Image 1 (cartoon, rainbow, N blue to C red):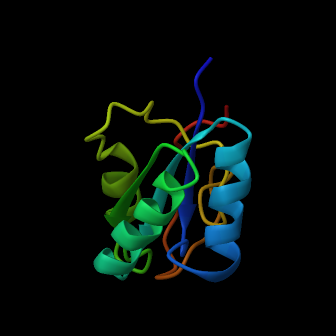
Image 2 (image 1 turned 60 degrees about the vertical axis):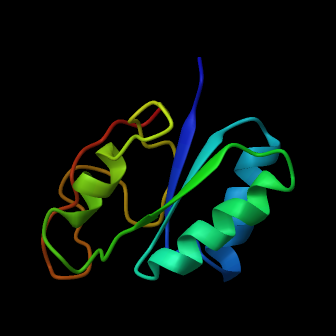
Length: 106
């Protein structure tokens, strides 16, 4: 089964490194970050490593933004979350003190 890792805050740093690691293991990568240009640039960098990736803007402090970004599917990636700092168990609190959407776990 094809997997997609949706990683927030992934335009740089640890989030970007996670995206590269999951991508090297064969996952499609959705780089989600508040910085739209940074997310797109990070996706381009992963393309250089032969990793399928897209960059999307996502501000996790805005109610519903995480779910909307996860369902944005320009490349046909499965809309399923396999790993993310903010995409977790039902009821987990995120920035903005609202519940994270349940997107699936693999």
